[in-house]
Length: 308
Image (cartoon, rainbow, N blue to C red; front, side, top):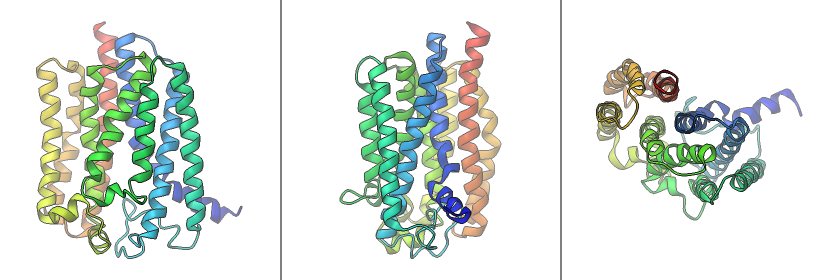
């Protein structure tokens, strides 16, 4: 395989987007350690690899079906954050090869999930895994095409929020809990914000091909107001959880990310309809997801070290 082809496949896998998996796995594991005082590192790495493989499978199947629907072909303004990997459109990778690769990664991730389910009491890991594979495949695949029907953002928020956070927690502790659910809510809001702001550059292509994203359904002017509302809700939620003692006081360290949110809100107010000017907001939102999630993880670790 030539170097050019290797780099084309790396682009197709969209590995930088795996932060959407790394953060909820880290949060769920940290909450589990905070509660139990132990971390099963083998289970942690297996969880991270298994969910990452499912995420890659989802990226690949999305590329394939957005290629079939012509969504990525008619996109006039692809960006590093949206519009797919573009490797099919640029002729580097065949569509059928992308679909086959997606099956490979789904199978690999599922096998790891089945092993983890065998190691952990009950069948919560199996249930979460089945939901994840189903949602990942049918997000753009026929006949459901969930991401084309106006509520794809909610599904992504569920999968990369409560599903992964609580699944990672269960792997560490063997049971479900309320605290990991509370910790998963801001993670869910953050990944919705990332997906949501990345839909603005795709507005024209999505509208033309009948992909009813939230931005298409609302229109860009109203949609950007929802983006700002979600940013505000993210910080209000954390403040409320800390003030009412629902989450450890040390998780208030996440509020240090507020300047990123404020900057994203200010730029997006004037740039939401102009893709080149909106790109810093896409980058800021991705940075907010990672930094907020990393600090939330650190908050649970600090509370365990300092106060127990």
